[in-house]
Image (cartoon, rainbow, N blue to C red; front, side, top):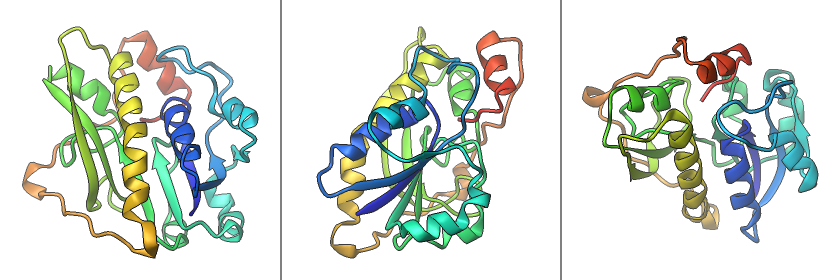
Length: 218
């Protein structure tokens, strides 16, 4: 199965190795955003450097400018695992199996770019990861997989990001299994009555401020 990964440093560092550990999966390219500064939430190798070590083609170009390249790669599936760009319709329609998004919350709760901030601010007892079909509506596609993890009062945003990144990687084998045999699995729709949002926030926290200055997103 040929896969393209759209991701950023952080989630990309766990999801990419998980994909590469599956024998019949070929990651033909990674698209990311290359920042001058280090990943601000915790000590982490830049995803572009990880790709170089693993000999994976990595591009920092805008995906909107890379439509022809993506078509040439003929992906069976595109996986988005936190990304700083909106995926346009002309790319959504390229992969044979579509595009799935790895969202770090228990959808339909906390759609949007800052679920880590939201769960810590609201003192949630749990969060999780939802893998869903990517559509033009933000984080609204049918869910394929969802797993939860407990939170403690001592969990910071940094820690929640790390924990959900590890959880996301653990779900990759099950995600790939859903598409085996050339089938397109059916997800379950999100209940619109339960939708909440985690919009982008700017506040005094130096870590989050640094991330915003880098124009990152989660």
